[in-house]
Length: 273
Image 1: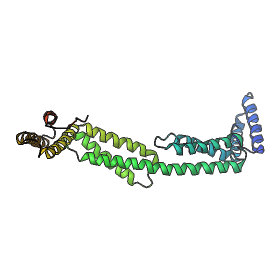
Image 2: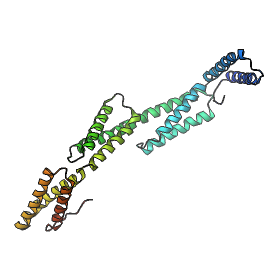
Image 3: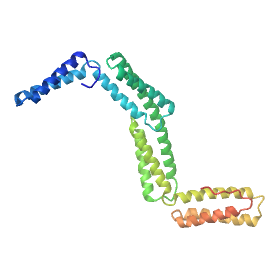
Image 4: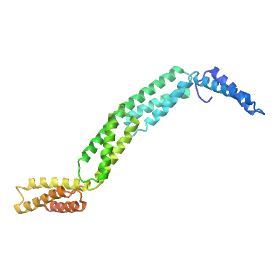
């Protein structure tokens, strides 16, 4: 009875049946033989009410408005698209509030809202799939690094396989894309923080910078100083090769190379945190 858009005939009929059933329930004693008859009458009148006029399509429009409002909460939605979606939602709500008995207006509002939702879902799917594919590429690149714990490596491999399968499914489940993005980013972060991955990456970067300093100083730095610095760099390269999983040795080598770089003549080296 609270729904909008029913025909006058269906509304009147349902009101009459409701009154009849209320009187029947309050009678003493209740006539058990008539209970099933009353159940059938109230269900039939309710069904006819829901199918009459614009009740059904107004109900569909209300549901679609709820779907659109949930879609508007998507974190990756650009502001201009969000504004357009809100406009369509507002217009649809106005039809529900003020023109629910006008079938043409209700149908038009529903079509416009469904069209806008489909358009945004397509756009959002493309955008979030791009983010997911980027996350997958970063995870695959991370997997090439050495020194991670077995647990973190196994987990990242598992998540990569799961994301690859998900991306290749048809159709892609839009509702699950953000979940997959979170999973791949979390697994990659845990991989990069596990074992000796982080210190190895820092030491590798510092070795590359040291090699550049050597090349830059070949014509300006005295030979003994240059050779001494080269020896430390060679030592660091050997440590990376032979002590991948020993965080203590890697850290000590990092500190030694860092000190040498700071002391290197005309060095412009600055530590990167």
